Image (tube, rainbow over all chains, first blue to last red; front, side, top):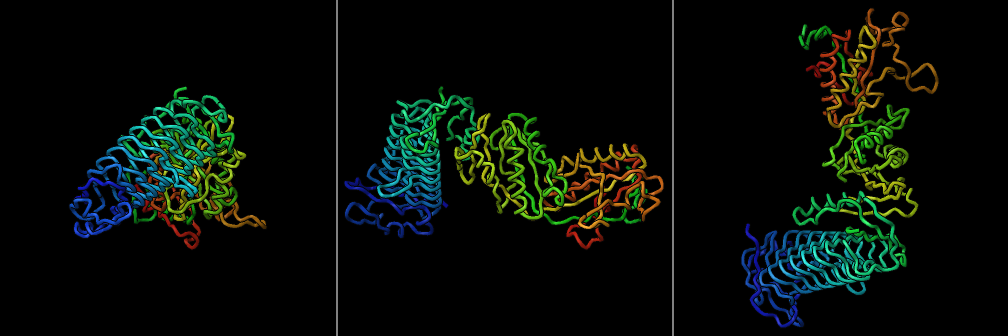
Length: 270
Length: 310
């Protein structure tokens, strides 16, 4: 069965809220039925058919073409199936996803994977601030799942993260893993300033940090078995998308000692 | 190998070795598996050997333990050489306690070791409960997918142990072969050959020393409180004094006991073991093969020797 395809036909002047437009919720619907579904467009509601050309019928794969940074909440609360987005996306893509796969073949705005619970999100471009972070008033960030970003990531990636993995080929901005409680944030190109500020538990991995906070203490060079397990897990889960495995010793900084200090920053280029 | 009599005739005789028309009686058990890794296979085996020590009989040891097979580095969670250990007990709860003590005292303590789930099963029991608290609050957890790993700081780095492991209640304990002969060293050599062959069978262990037991037992004792005592019917020095089941020339009996994760694996191990006995027995003055049972009323699993013939 071919995928359901949504092709953006308007140039939205406001925000388009695409939450709930997921393979599971569209499964079994015809193109006509999908066209009649409503989405929020700023203060008003529009039918999908007014914004998108709809082709095919609901299956386990949804393709969104022509997306712009004004398209928010793409893939939010997805539970199963695959969503492929051609173009850039706005805020909150993949928010509270509980399974499935979201592939963004462009850039993503802030709060990508906000409070992600499970599933895989792949971004070919770069991502804005607060990747994985909770919204104001919420307690936890990511509680599972994997996010792979081939470009760079903005500030505060992995904030209040409990579990899960974020992997970036590019650099991650300041305050990566702030107030983190578990999980892994891994950059192949380094972190900005204030990495791990107020983190309680969890692991940050990178070749460098722009300025290590003084509340992280140097524990020396070590070969850590948990990295072998992580390498293997990511290779099994991600295949070619997996980062190059870490071999040899890493320099371990424990912190944030201004909190309970059970977290760590592992520098791979020491 | 030449069969003098057919499988249905009495007694069966292959290569000059008589095969009793009897069966091994085995019991349902619970079992778990773990994978122990280390920097080298030598140290993975060392940890496994230490952990499985004093694990011959569930009655006296609390669990029956043994090494199943060596796991190549590419198949272990941390990419290091490993050993799969099986632990059998009466119930999952009793295995849980045994794991806690054995892993805590024998694996955690072994240089460079790590310990992982070694049995995929729906039912889980704790693996890290106990050992992880050795970390005194410095232990941290890493959850990757559905699996949680604990990192416990120790003096040579970190001890990594998975949170839970699988447990099955479909395991079988007590498959057995009795090897009888005129020469004690020869009977031992034959049993050694059988164990070597049986070690290639997956999902089974032979929990006694080197896989072989010299003190086969019967149920009960003349002494109050002893649940088992020497199997006098198979003791050669009592041949004239008891209701012996040995021939006039028999001087030694050794037993191979088999525990398996499934009934099929136990049956396979008995076939492989019996084949090795029949091949190597004639040159070692082995005269007969038998099996231990309790009349067939106690154990759920019966393995007839005639069904195990090669």
